[in-house]
Length: 78
Image 1 (cartoon, rainbow, N blue to C red):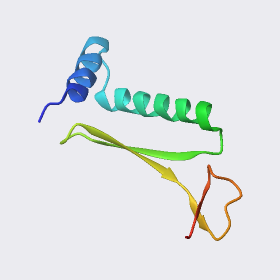
Image 2 (image 1 turned 90 degrees about the vertical axis):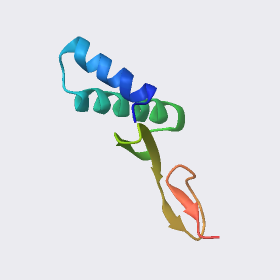
Image 3 (image 1 turned 180 degrees about the vertical axis):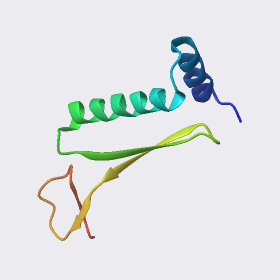
């Protein structure tokens, strides 16, 4: 299934004669940079791109703790 996201990635890759994986990596890096700018450098994220569905999924990596001292890196067990 060709979504608008996949179509845009393919178009950019073709226009610039680069591999579409490079385009995907650039998009992912840009999103992570924006998140760090907004929430701080300690916010750890992972982005996965699903070419079959044409979707990107953002995961925020946190440690489970009994008492949260940093909301960017920790989440309560409760």
